[in-house]
Amino acid sequence: MNVGASRPFRSPRAILFDLDGTLIDSAPDIAAAVNELLAGSDLPPLSVDQVKAMIGGGVRKLVERAFAASGAPLLAGALEEANRAMAPIYRRHLTGLTRLMPGVREVLTHFHLNGTAMGVVTNKPQLATREVLLHFHLTEYLGAIVGGDAVTHLKPAPDALLLALDQLWVDPFEALMVGDSSSDVGAARAAGMPVVLLRGGYTQIPVEELGADLVCDSLLDLPSAMQRLQAAA
Image (cartoon, rainbow, N blue to C red; front, side, top):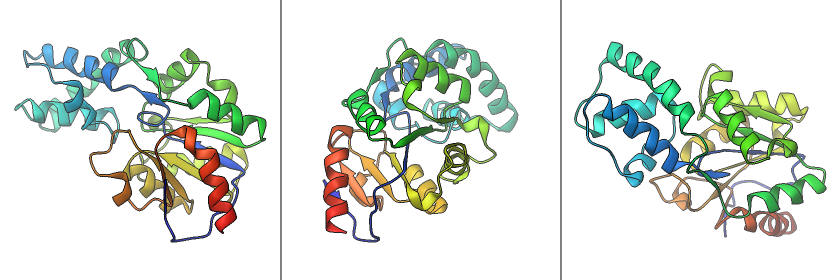
C-alpha cells in the first residue's frame, strides 16, 4: 500500500468504481472483439497484452488504436464506419472470457453491509456495462451505473462521476473513486474527489506515478487501507 500525502482522508459515504481493470478482467473478451473486427479487414490478430494496452478512452478510441497498431490507421470517415461495425461485435464478447478481479464480491459485500453507497462509472457503453454487472450478479450492490454513452464527455472528464453521485445523493467531497488508470485519477480530481488506484489493472504507467491518494495491491486491501488512512488523518 502506498499513501499519498496530498490531502486529508475521510470515511466516504459513497464509493465509485471503475469497471474494466478494476472490478473485472475483461481484456480477453475485448481482445476477441478487436480481433474479430480486424479479421473483417484482413488484418492479423493482436495479442491480449497488446489490446490491454489500448483499453481506456471508450470503444471508439480502442478501435482507432487497434487499426493503428495493425499498420492500417483509419481516417475520420473510415474510423466512424469501423466504430459502427464494432458495436455488435463488442456486444457479443462481454462475458465469455471475462472474470471478476480478486476480492470484488467480498469487498462490495463489506461496504454494502457498512451502509456505504456504491456505483460504477466507466467509459464502457451503458448497455454493455449493465449486461456485465447483471451477469456477475453485482447490480444488487450498486445504486448508480453510468456508462460512457450516458454522458457528454468520457473520463478523465468528471461527467460520469458527477452523474453517479447525483443519483446517489452524495456530494463529491463525501465520496471516493476507485480505479486503475490515469483517467480515473483525472476524473476524480476534476470532480473534487479523493482517488484510490489498484495494481494489476490496465494502465501502462506504474500506478505509483499517477498521483492517487492511495495505491493498493488489490480490492481486498481496500477496507483495511482506508481504516489506516483515516486513523492517520
